[in-house]
View 1 (cartoon, rainbow, N blue to C red):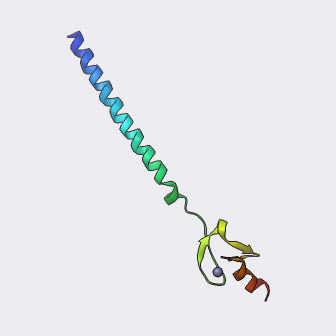
View 2 (view 1 turned 120 degrees about the horizontal axis):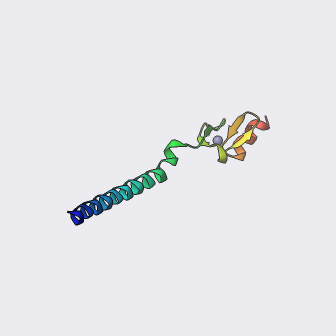
View 3 (view 1 turned 45 degrees about the horizontal axis):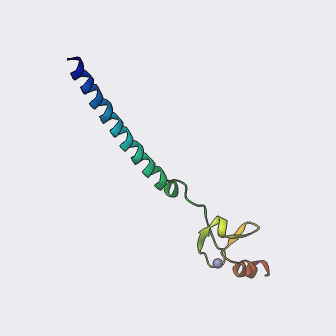
Length: 78
Ligand SMILES: [Zn+2]
């Protein structure tokens, strides 16, 4: 019976490794998708046209945000 037990153990280990690899692959697939959902880009609103734009692409003047230089200038040159 010693050989039979060894065979069962080998199958259990193989099944466990296969399951582990599947879980790892699934987790890896999830982690590549989630950053866009879990960490949204901070959005700001243009004071002139009220368009929402990512903060890193927006232009800032004092406490106000603008989508482009023209819109910023229309307020700063008043
Ligand atoms: Zn604008």
